Amino acid sequence: MMVMESRLIQEVFKASNGRIVGRIRLQKIFYLLEQLGLNSGLRFSYHHYGPYSEELAHKLFIAEILDKVIAENEEVSNAGATYSIFNLKIEPNDPLEQVGAIPFKKALSAITAMKEPTSVVIELAATIHWLKHKEVYEDWKAELKIRKPTKATDNNIDLATKLLGDIELN
Amino acid sequence: MSNTIQRVRDPVHGLIKFESDADLVAWNLLETLEFQRLRRIRQLGFSEFTFPSATHTRFAHSVGVYHNARKLMQVVEKVEGKNFDKDRAEEILFAALLHDVGHGPFSHAFEVARERIAASKGIDRIEKHEKYSAKIIRNPNGSIFPILERKRVGLAERIAAVIEADDPTDIYHAVISSSFDADRLDYLVRDRLMTGTGAGSIDTDWLVDNLTEKFVNTAQDDDPEPQGVQTFVFKFKGRQAAEDFLLARYRLYTEVYLHKTTRGFEALLSRLLQIVGDTSLPLDTLNLLTENALVAFLRGTETVEVYLELDDFVIWNVISSLAKCQHEEACKLSKRLLIRDHLHVLDLFSKCGNDDLALANAVRDIENFAGSELGVSIFKDAPEINLYSEQSGEAKKLHKVVRVQDGSGQPREITEFAETIISASLKKKRRMIRYYFLTMEKRDEAKKAIWG
Image 1: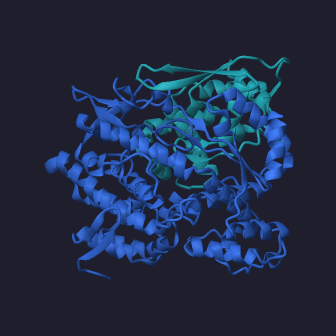
Image 2: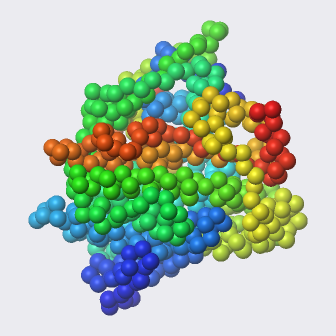
Image 3: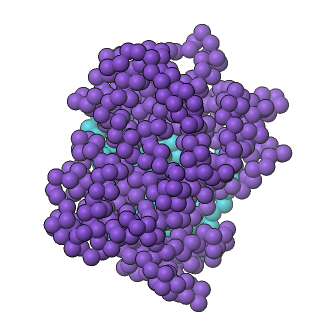
């Protein structure tokens, strides 16, 4: 298991075309990549918006403030919410064949798919994965509707399961 | 099983009467074995080592939450009028009473230790106290489930679902899950009273009298479509009291809940619990028995039945045994707890203030200095705090934002008012990073490693 350092954050951002929008999306991208074999060593636990890693938040802080490879800016959405945009400031100085232990092309394709839907849908996708594989619920849909009664609409669940299928995590 | 009017005297709320049909069900719940366990769990764990009178229990708190929930439900009844749903209201009142029934002893230290034990065994996750509350309520062999099912079939499941939900679904639910809910309205007032701190002030009656409900549209991250949240907002006349309430809450977090000495004792207990849960250590070296509920639970028997045996007394009993054991580290750490011999803290939060670069540099230097001792004899604590006192997670919870109606009746976040005394900068999360050392000498060596 490798130790998660700023280098791996750089790799993930490189495969994100240098930009990830929103703290929720950023956490869920790392969680779902970990399930695809990122091998970051990060530990996730269940929080309000689904799987979340305190350790990742801390590593991002170091990557941003100390190593200065990431920059964070805040913007206000049309719906009035303040959200963060993370940009890669310094690219890895060698061509990437892997993102962690994931082939670069596979990571690029997965992250591209994870940047498409709303943050609610990626939150649901990560939570579905968590309920199925970590908490091992047979009827994960019923549990999802209990945990996220307002977000887990049939349409959002369809979009979330489609996302998991698109990144080959179903 | 009681059917007569019951009364409880309480230092926060005065006389609390149980007299309606729902109250009598609540009283029967309160008399169950599961609920009585909360008498043996202190609300603030090790805070009594810092604030000696803070010995109140989760039992007293839970009764207070039920009392507050009844008051807030009257606000809901007033605004809902003839649409008021009595059955839904009862569900929420019982959920208010039972919300902490799954709390473990020394909650924070206990869950931190369990996470670390699970990580060391390659287990992905632990079940947290909210999950145990739901399991205890759903347990058909327990005492709570039949009381609820006698009241109404399916009631236990509905209450468990309310407790497990990440987001509130309606204004009834907001009674126990909003910026101004029955839970925090009890614990903030009770903890302030019992610790003797003068931090802020909470004008409960005025605040409740100035509550109304609104459907608030709000979005998460950059999502284009807002989500509607039906929640409590304060009327304009309640704005200043709401500011005081928020400040009191913020002060209680910084001065009581996250007090550096208290958190140091939690780190110490957490380390001890990890030793107890280490299955590679023979129990005789720890002077413990297999039958001990804490030993059984931490070593893998994570059933509801065993969980319900855990309380502060079981923990202290184990600490007493460890203080006489052959395991040198466990023996020393236990003795430190028994005589309140605190760890030595290096508080980067007070040293670096809001200078993130200085903080990040100090963190890297200390962690290089600590090496493999981190988590073994040097302990890190890094809770996060902001105006809304959230301690972890990636974004603020949309239903936890304090909103006040402006002159036109529109709800606005409390920090948006021009004349507010609350700085919007407090909405940003700050990391209260601290490192704890077994000796002052080691702490001073670490200081030298960072600052020379």
